[in-house]
Image: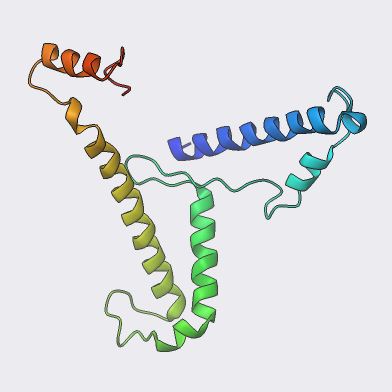
Length: 154
């Protein structure tokens, strides 16, 4: 299981716990203390979502993505290829990918998501660049100057 899929599972579990806590706090007359099998209004509202839960979108440091992004990318490509934009897409005019509008749109969404992930990761790394120093003592001085006891967490 990839790190992105592990994070996805953690996020889903966090939301399940949060919805159950909301039911206990705001709908305690229905669910009681939450030990029974009674589903409260917040948890019932969560089950009305697209996949009976939230759909977290997670990307890893090396470009790996969770299955939710793949599903959404396919759905967006399907919808875009069925719309008016697909009328102007031709395999003759687009030399990146051969085929009909769907594979061309799928490839474009894949590239756009990859670029967004890489841009976000590089902006995060560049934001921490001021902690890079030649020696350990210099790095410690900079970290303590920023009121941080852990130089890895600004």
